[in-house]
Image 1 (cartoon, helix red, strand yellow):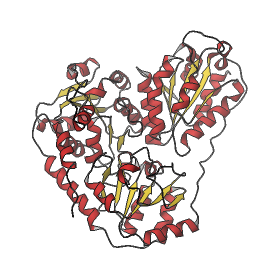
Image 2: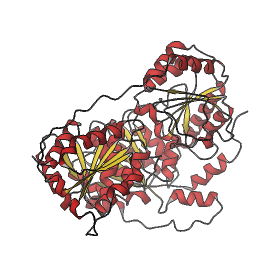
Image 3: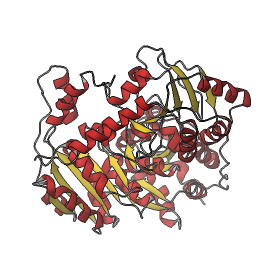
Image 4: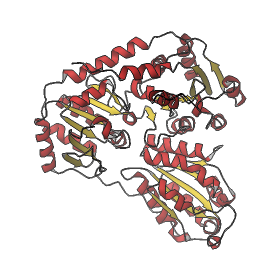
Length: 545
């Protein structure tokens, strides 16, 4: 047995089912060992970035580290964007890269860079394996650190000489995660803060989903009768159709929900990562009383100077608080904001204009997808509309990258999502700007025999940048481009291609695509003049008295 064989045995013990990547000369031993594995399937992607994005979304959906593989030099650097995305989106991921023989590391040679040094900036931990006997320890540590709160990416480098070296050893067994529990004293202090609050508001973050704490959050909100808002990355952490759900927080401008935060005298932040949405946007005057409930101590921020922090397993903390607290009178103001959002959705969701308004696309997406189906949003103007208006009823049914917020994630992410949950319907929502960044992975999806839908919001420009330029009073510049014929482009990969020519065509086309065995790409021309209409509306005083 060589070190590569032992390495793959360690991956098997960690429960790895898929390794996404591109092989190289310096990973031949690892790829051979993977090929011999009866448990792990190596999936060849067309670009390392796509492989990393697939591992990223797979890890975020399952809670188990997604694994990606690349060779040295350019292969390794091509992984970085997806690895960084996983790290800031708090998705567990383990990146593996090959390397030339270590005996050459002291001098200049072909394709060599210090890969662990490069990955240090985008991971929680990175390590070069120096001797074959340390493989079990390094692999176990990489997976352990990747899943510990807050989850993220780790990186392991295995050089070709170490990989081929003989070794005697066996994998280390995974240990259970630690469960911290807030003390009785801290919970009593939290209850006192709750009792003294007149207008509390719950802010649910991505940590609620990572902790699988939605049932406990719902029970706590119902027992206390406190309204709940969520971040973009926590859509579905609290059901959008629950009477206590207010809306989603994420636009960097005034919205109905910010009115609720303006009025709240206590914000209960649960599983909230500051990277999701800066507290300066909802606590600009630094005057909010804040109760923080999270798995680990919070980041320091002048706008997030909490009054009390309960550090512990979120499900446990919420369950105990629910047992110990009492029902309170409701806040009609916050729930009134929910009604305003519902009225807006109803008004614009049936608009028949063409090109199609973003609100109509979202309404049709929601109508076509089931409660547990998965919508993956790429990054761009469409992400802001999805974040604001798409209703999510269950955790991990609306995936938005809002930590690193990298364009190009949705298509390879859909591959990871479909492999993780083959029984669910999956839609990748992408602007035409981000679609061509990783559209080559259509071939990967077709080769794997997967079924999902890609919806391209077409406007032939980088819409989000144009939106920001106009808001700043700048003339849009450097944002326009042309597109290929997306229908023919899709067909060239063996996919179905559909172009929508009227607003009324999108929903039936989407429903048909969701039932199709294979990949369907739907080209939907979008009217992004709605961006500035929304900006003008939100710039007014929209808060009810």
